[in-house]
Image (cartoon, rainbow, N blue to C red):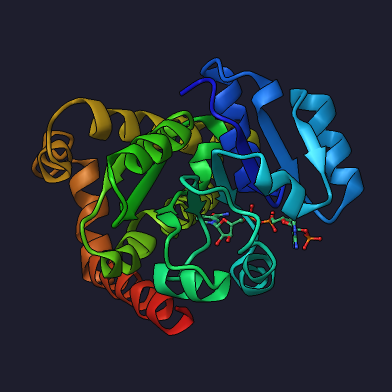
Length: 267
Ligand SMILES: NC(=O)c1ccc[n+]([C@@H]2O[C@H](COP(=O)([O-])OP(=O)(O)OC[C@H]3O[C@@H](n4cnc5c(N)ncnc54)[C@H](OP(=O)(O)O)[C@@H]3O)[C@@H](O)[C@H]2O)c1
């Protein structure tokens, strides 16, 4: 896999996260190409990672085993329409664009024979702690290649129906923002209680990181971990009682459902 030639179309935040992950995991920079319409951005990526850069998507695609489409969803149609004849037979096309379905990609490419993997990553990939959920109807080779690219920046999971990516978008794609909101509110409350902004931010960030690590690594369910820190009649119980009374669980549940609905509308 480390010999694969991988081309990123669009050198934004997510592309950078995936490139950084691949380089950390030992993929040679000389086998990575990134394109963008902004020369300045390409200069930054070249300096930081030593990757090859190009402003010509067609040329960059024609030499690639794996192509990662990393432009914004609204830029996808134009970008893909220009690539149809340049893709090598047997190459793997990975799309991380939210909401753009495999059939739509094939239709814009004007080719039905292209092997496509759709992925919903999330922003913690920027620090190597992402979770990417993948779907593809292509064969094992293309699954393995996509797994290789995405696993370099965090965990991976697969779904076997494309329409489940709406739910994934609502849970893990948009999910970091829910936790950031909670951290914002907790920080502000800490300041109101007399802590310095700096200390309150540090406490909220480290508490979120620690709770996340326990959730990911303890093998215990969230509910069980919550019960473990909630002594009857204690401080945590007092906080949770008020949060329940004020409808926090219901609000979060409705929010996640709204994100899924919006993902379907955008698709
Ligand atoms: N960020 C997230 O949380 C997240 C999560 C899951 C999935 N995604 C998906 O990841 C994709 C990339 O997101 P991002 O946040 O990395 O976006 P981004 O920072 O805007 O990166 C896209 C880059 O592609 C460039 N570009 C535009 N048209 C191009 C073209 N024709 N050829 C080559 N490059 C072109 C853009 O330049 P300009 O800025 O000049 O237009 C920009 O530098 C999106 O489709 C998004 O849905 C993002």
